[in-house]
Image 1 (cartoon, rainbow, N blue to C red):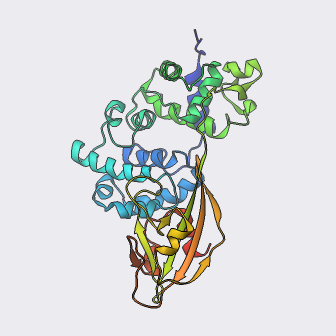
Image 2 (image 1 turned 180 degrees about the vertical axis):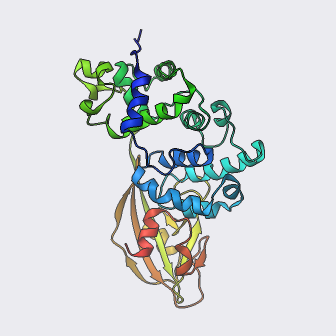
Image 3 (image 1 turned 60 degrees about the vertical axis):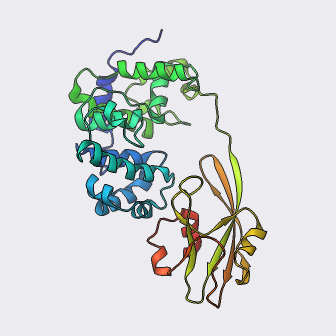
Amino acid sequence: MTTLPTGFARRMVDWQRLHGRQSLPWQNNRDPYRVWLSEIMLQQTQVSTVLDYFPRFLARFPDVAALAAAPQDDVLALWSGLGYYSRARNLHRCAQAVMARFGGVFPRRAEDLQTLPGIGRSTAAAIAAFCFDERVAILDGNVKRVLTRVLGYGADLAVAQNEKALWALAQELLPTRASDMPPYTQALMDLGATVCLPRKAQCEACPVSRLCQARAQGEPLAFPVKTRKLKRSSATLWLLWAVNAQGQVWLQKRPDTGIWAGLYSLPVFDTEAQVLAAWRQGQDAQYIAPWKHVLTHRDLHLHPVRMTGAGPSEPACDGRWVDADAWSGMGLPAPIRALLAGT
C-alpha cells in the first residue's frame, strides 16, 4: 500500500507561483487552442525548439478554424523540422474534428477531449486542467518520474496494471480546490523539466524533497522502473537528387504511412542500382558523402546521389519538378531540407 505524502499539492502550487516557469508564450492563458497546440508540439521536443515554432504557427493559423481549413501540405510545411510528423497530421485532423463535432469549440472535459485525434489521456487532462480547472491528473514522462520518486513507487511501469495504479495515485494527489489545478499541473511539468531530471535529481532545489521516498532511500535515480526498452533499428536509404537544366529539383510526396509520411522528399530507394536506374538520362552522378540521421528509435543511413539532366527527360518515379524558391516553403524532412540548402 503506497502512502500518500501530506501537503504535496499545496507545496507544489506554492513553489510554482514563486519558482516555476512563468514566461512561456503558451502559459497564463485559458485558450484551449493555444494550450493544445503547445502540448502537441512539446511531445518529445525541447522547449527551446518549440519556442521558435509556436509563434510562427499561431501567426499562420491563429485559431482552430484557420487550421482546420488549411491544406494538410501547408500544415506539414510549417511543421517541417519539428519531427514526429504524425503529430502534425493528427493536429490537422483534430482541428477538423473540433469544427465538425463540436462547432469549433474545444470540449471542456478530458473525457471528451480524449476522443479527438492525437489527444491522449495526459494531453486531454492538461488541456482540461489548464483551461477549465478540471480535477484530472496528467502523467507524461516527466510526471511519472516525479511521482514515482516522491512515492517511492518501484513497480515496473512496463506492466500495464502498474501504470494504471500510478494513474490512480496521481488522481489522489490532486489539490482539492479546482482553482489550484492550473498551477499544480504546471508545477509537475516544471519540476520534471528543471529539477527532478532523468540523470540528476537536484533535491536541494525541490519543494517536496522532505516528502520524497526516493530521496529518503538515498537513490532517487532508481525511479521510475521500466524494464521494457524499445529496440533500435536502422535502415539504408538511397536518395535521388535529380536536378534539371532549369535548376529545378524532382520531389515526390511520400505515402501516408511509413517514414516521412505525407512529406515531400527526394525519391527514396533501397539500393544504389535502383537509384541509378530511376533516371537513366541523368548525367554526372555525384555521390554525396553519406551520413547517419538519428531518429528516436531508428538510425537512417542516407546516401544521396546527385544527377543533372540537359533535356526534357524526367526520372522514372512519381514526383514533379519544383523550383528552388518553392521547395523551401514545402513540408520536407529535416535532413532533406538541410541537403538541398547545402547545410
